[in-house]
Amino acid sequence: MRLWWPTMPTRERPAAGRTHVPSAATNDPKSALGPNGAGGPEGATDTPTDRHAEILGAALELFATIGYRATTMAQIGDRIGIRGPSLYKHVASKHEMLVEIMVGMMSELLRRQRAALDAGGDVRERLERITAVHVQYHAEHRYEAFVGHREIDNLEERERGRILDLRREYESNFRELVEEGRECDVFHTSSDRWSSYAILDMGIGVSAWFNPAGSVSPDELAATYAELALRMLETT
Image (cartoon, rainbow, N blue to C red; front, side):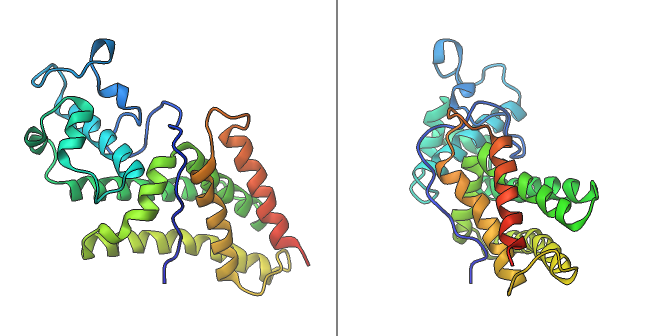
């Protein structure tokens, strides 16, 4: 049984900015282009780290928009002006890039969640805080979120198990807070597990429809969703 359910993102690009994916400098494919939007020549002054970031950013966008299996190394190279075979100077394989994106996503989610828990407070405050960072992440990193949730079956078994272990840790932190609140008679639910899944799915769904050019900012949306999660659990 899957822990989370992927949903199709809208086609609008996320707002430009840095991504947490290891070595990936930006989600914006234009960052990989030279002056006037033209692809830079191979062997330009980019450092290996810069080039790896460009490749990973191009792969992320293609994995999110057309799917991992449909994406070819040639298409990734075309996005940044590198011939397909030359990509292998910087990355070992398409699968390696998928692993890097998915591990980066889960590592960043857990980092934010742990920071929110470490801030302390009562059970209500802690659940509100980890729900907010969960939702905000999915609004700010829509492509990473979609690839991370949808493409797990394309991982090799060892890497798939690694991601599932990270997911279980992430979900269990929600469930433990729900259980704690229920035992303190702060929350009311017939299932700690299903309640934690409901909160997770609220955030995941944001990556499907959130428009960074819209009238609501990620932090405003996160605060609203956190309030909704608390109301759901506090209803008697």
